[in-house]
Length: 298
Image 1 (tube, one colour):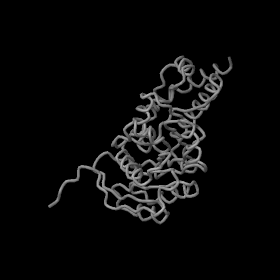
Image 2 (cartoon, one colour):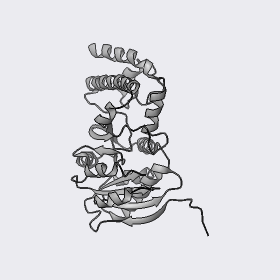
Image 3 (cartoon, rainbow, N blue to C red):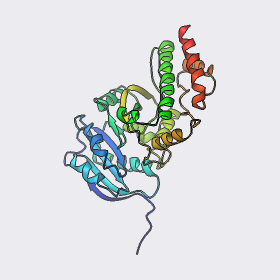
């Protein structure tokens, strides 16, 4: 009898004998990432963390490569919920094995974390942060190969964000960012539990959990020095994810800007950014850039 699977179903678990001993757990969802998972794991191999790959709905060698690289593995079928369900499942299974975990970290299989990424996250967690949102940058070689219209748009966005960072430093003495990327999130275990964990959503599960933590009044750090490098592929795994956004922007010069681009959690920055006006498409960026340049000259 064939029964329809309605919840995530684990088909295999592989955990090294000493897995869970570091107190730092990194969970990486992966769907058919055989071409990229080895590079992802290589960036983590000397960072003193227990790495768990959640190979969800894979039909390639992702799982075999992950275990060959020394990572723990959960092979599973996720009928709905996609990456959010995979992250949630991996963290739940990992916490059962690493009960003394001091931090929960997550990234993506098409990303390469920077050296010291785990330690940088841990410093914030140890200082009392409920969660740490890292900064995602493109893998340089892949970014350079993007279509020319995308590169022109990226240059405008980068210029605006660089000036925005300068203005924040000028007004507040600090520089943060507004990203909430699943490619670089870290949580204190108690904060993760208080937020109810990742929602089983096919996309935007990262933003949802960070917004819940903020609504609870828990301290969330957006750290620019906590860096991850992401692929610039145009065919991705998550509907509505980064690859889909790149495709949309390549096809339509008037595709919307990221809604967080003109936002800030800091009251002084909010007031300054409110004088720019709404940022909807890249056509709004030149005037916004000129306006911030004027603010910085005052």
